[in-house]
Amino acid sequence: MPEVIKTYVRWVDRVSDYVGFVAMYLIFLMIGILLMDAITRNVIDIPVHWAIEAAQFTLAAFYFMGGAKTLKDNNHVRMDLFYDNLSETGKARMDLITMVCLLFYLSVLLFGSISSLTYAIETGERRFSMWNPSMIPIKSLMVACIMLMLLQTVSLIFKHWATLRGERIA
Image (tube, rainbow, N blue to C red; front, top):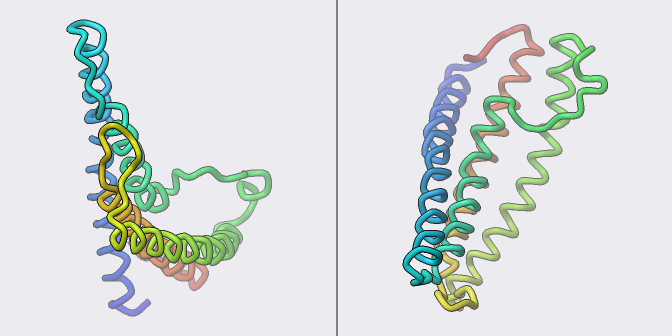
């Protein structure tokens, strides 16, 4: 494989690891928000109206940010009915087919998310609730994370292609 592809794969893998590492700690933030909500609501009887929505946004960010790392580490859900019995090159072929389908799916998802973000920016979209938060930050994060998942999918396509050629990209 050309050096530019190897560099691309290393760069995307590194970014996916970093974003996944940050996402890992969002669970603790969400636990803290929910704990604070429980204490203020039940112990001191002062409900914090924004806490549940903030926890929902944090969980959404966790899912978005963890996507590329999950792809990179091959920790996603897979039906192993036939896959486990395949050879290394058979698995690479199957993964290439899957990655092309994923590339199409993520492209459609990216198109929709950009459209949704554009709408949120143009209209100043806010969530209809007592807290009334802007939807722009979470939708921006969604677009960025779907882009990273697309980049990671291309990285995986390069890795599987290299496997079929008898090479390995670290």
